[in-house]
Image 1: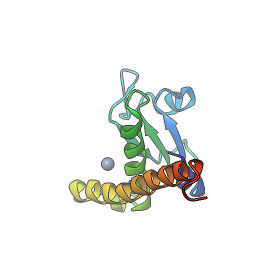
Image 2 (image 1 turned 120 degrees about the vertical axis):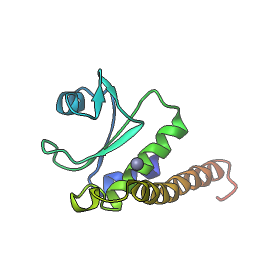
Image 3 (image 1 turned 30 degrees about the horizontal axis):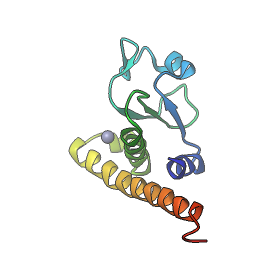
Image 4 (image 1 turned 90 degrees about the vertical axis):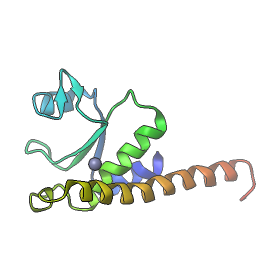
Length: 125
Ligand SMILES: [Zn+2]
């Protein structure tokens, strides 16, 4: 997860859990939430009362699901899907693009963990 958070931080993209109170206050009355629960596994959000795009994810999902969701949502941001022009058109294509970028980030994140674990064991030292 650290690699993905680093990528998000490098672009000033904050990553929030769906139960973050400030975010719930800002977005709780929008389509992003239904009955106090996030309406999807995750969202990339560029909302008028937020400074930068954010990524939202469900805390209740397991670790790897959360990691892929965050990577996928970053993919939407990096692919420019949050701009009005790019939000029109083929949503299947947008989802595919986000997942392709997300898969790369997810893979690099797994690789970083592997590399760190090898270093801890002295294999790569
Ligand atoms: Zn998506």
